[in-house]
Length: 553
Image (cartoon, rainbow, N blue to C red; front, side, top):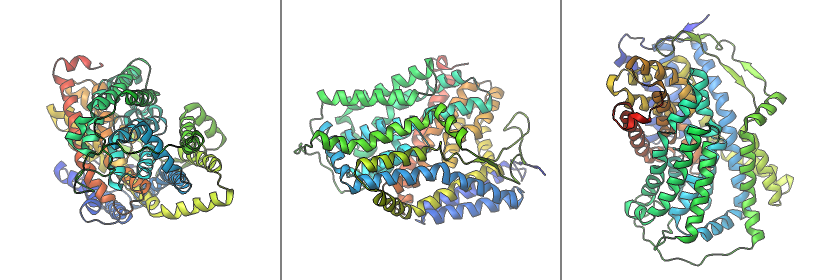
């Protein structure tokens, strides 16, 4: 028998919203303020979510359990599968010494830690976001940064901050393609609208990233490189999104930005080098710019061996992201399992959707086409290139699994929590609280997208969750649906750095276990500040000329 979601079970939106927020507040408070281990905090949040769903929202207990189980499976594949295999590759590279050679080769481009951070976290991370998404860029870049000697907080927090502007077009445009497909937006129009919002922040984020790492003065010392990096990303991002489509936006922009920065550094270097890998005000009592140190040179053969595993990874991740290749692998093996007792038995109702419709709950075991499988194969090929024998490869894989066991459990519990809030309707209650803001809706509607990603860990999921509500609310207020659909995705990218699964991915990649709360506290200000800036910009596009001329109707 179908169960219909209720978004205001107490007839008072203040009470209903407060209750809906309890699971998220419990988990974040446990992580950020009470320093409880991540898997325990996630378990506490999940218990709270079950109690709220069953006792306050009237969701049948069996449905609540199955929704949590469904989310847990999703946590294992694709998210946990990515984390396990990227850490496996990182472990292999560290043990054979190639990370040290990687560090020395980057020093050949620049010894300045600010510029290394820019190159890896922003440019290289954007490429992996465009090719794969779903936690891959943070896992890769945080792992490389910790191998280069960056402090755990710097490697974790700054990888999360850098992984913002590319997220809306991540995984070959999956978030915006899903938004258009599920909620009836015109794909090219909403893609173009996102491409008229995010480039401003693609220009801003490199400056913000280095300010967060080294401070305002140190940021201004390298402003030419920051300007080159931001502009060479923002301009292709605008052009590709407005005149080609969503699929290759990040990949093209990342390659152009990376190439531009490397070429620029051949003719320009800062007068003083920032050689500390720790963050101002967090890991050392003081930072001083230092004079250049001797650069360690390696033979071409050594450099080739050190970079080969990461080149192989890039190729595999890109190929595994191609829609045609994914479709081919899914035809070979991708069994679908409708969740009995949940699939099509929960009804979404207005104002979230225009007409009531059932929520599907089908778990697809797309093991072959999963990004994590491509990463695993690249790691095995890389291991053979690094001259590991099969027994050593298996032994390292088992040790890696043991290393990340609690992180995998945390991801499972967090995805269970996020999925339960979706099927119980509590996340929609929170969204409706933003939607009731009247003339301020462009600002708060943008924050709705931020909330969606912070809760679900995915811009795609946020677009599925709130994309229809954005369209309905925009039409009622006389705003462009494309503006608010795009705002949901653009605002959502700033929530990516505080979503629980991304934080766990970062802490696992840096092996800074049980410090998820430290990472959360560090990135939270940056997340909400950037989200508010996006909201302010969307408000200008809604009401103030000449920004209104940018809107795609």
